[in-house]
Amino acid sequence: MTRMDVPADKGQCDIRLQIDAEAEVYVRGDPVHIRTISGRDGRDDGSESNAPVPERDLEGFRFEVADGRGAIRLLSPPSRRSGYQGWYTFGAARAAKAATISA
Image 1 (cartoon, rainbow, N blue to C red):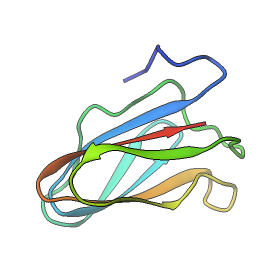
Image 2 (image 1 turned 90 degrees about the vertical axis):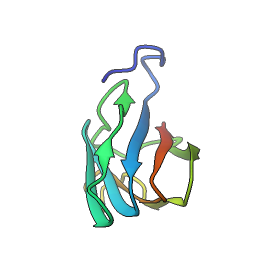
Image 3 (image 1 turned 90 degrees about the horizontal axis):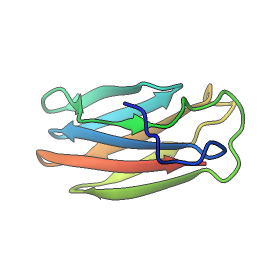
Image 4 (image 1 turned 60 degrees about the vertical axis):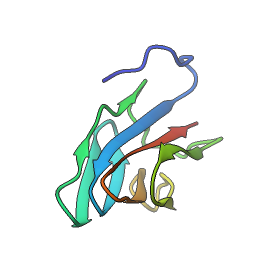
């Protein structure tokens, strides 16, 4: 889904997932990829962004937990070293999770 309410010179990606127990998540370009570590398979619950994550260093990168139960942690921000993909862990007890990435 594409966000239309973010200024053209800014980027924002809202990640919304259903995670049963624990998952690693990465964003590269536009899609959100989920690798379930434990529990039932995670699923995207309406994640959206105004543009794909660019393949260049991001100035002003921010990661913010919006809501949900359990821990949401940034493992690695998008960078040349990570192939311009951001890695995150989501841990939950049958809860919806949301995080916002912006630059």
